[in-house]
Length: 560
Image (cartoon, rainbow, N blue to C red; front, side, top):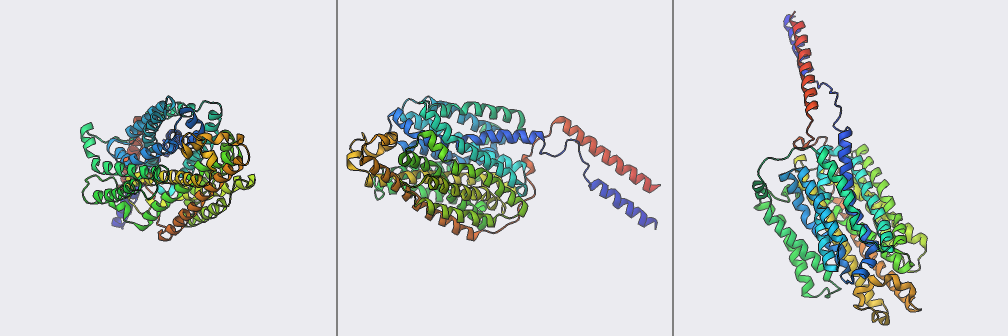
């Protein structure tokens, strides 16, 4: 019996040691976490605000700077933001999350200041490129930091709130851009980023105390995959140049379009192969691309922004050219799309957390996108206002569901230690899709306008159809029947964009077939967790000593 009693006491002591003692500091998701989340929210707010605000201000910018490369105002931003994204995961791994975020915010601030002070189109396009590098890193590193602090299984609501922030910025962008453009102050579209960056920088500097990898600057730079980065940057650039030229500067059949496009796509494939075979610290680990659920998540991540960003970018053009809306009015009329995104993203994120499932949400989202693109393709210059505003709201609902949910099939099958690079490639897929959406949409519209605009109207433009964006505001002043013909040409051209997007939505729907509901992680990578303050460490030590004392006392009673 004595032996039995000793064994029971030993077991009790062991159980007591194994039981964690609650600490007065509480959960890691206290005030400090939410202040960090606020900093990340400010940072994330910048990119969609910048993208959508320029969409409504584009005619004013083109007219003021006497330029004709209107596609490059958007494409230069998306090009550089996309090209740097795979590298952003490596930067966060090698230099640490905090230095990488500080670098990203600083670069975005410099680019914004340069954009605001631009005196000509080449200056603005180059500055947008600098701004894009910062914006791309912000998008990627924000998601990486969240993945370090919140387990995937609990991330539904958090990712939903981030989606709401994105949607709010996307909703405010066209209104802010339109208002400033109408007031002749489009430069403030870029200057307004500076105080937002300042607040985010201060919060990151004060609160984001996470581990920083040791090593000298030279040793850290040596760890980056420079060969892989060079291949991806060059390949992405070749693809975007080809898409920008196609149908506008050169026909699609031209070797000046096909050659860079083929070289770029082959280069991206080669980059994946190179990383799998030779890179010691690859940008894209092969394990990220070797799971069918992860691949399905990446495919859906690509197709969704092609549709939603094309809609956000070209619906204001429809409102201005076909409905005679001002820049600010076109931003308000886009509310049907952007204001549905936020609530839908949050509700979808909550549904993922509650049901521990993400597959059925994908089916619902893509079904709605297919329906919405079909409806948009029926719009013409004289469609009712109800249809012109109501149909885009379905894009917001379907796009919001898919936006919120593709995050989970990408990460669920992978070890938590690979989240940073997986998320960098996730952001790359989303951003690269934006390049295709905006540039292909612009190419389709230019081609259709070249076919259907009245010849006598094209002859009045200094540079033909290339300058049509700068002349949208004057359509209402044209004599009949030219005015009606121009409105109808725009309506038919934009409808063609939506017909192409039906095919993209169908591809997204089909990609769901390969996805499974893989259980989601309940833990984070402790390597990158928040560092505790000194007083927290002292409390933890005191609690540990108290627990050991309790065990010692209990063991002593057993001996007696």
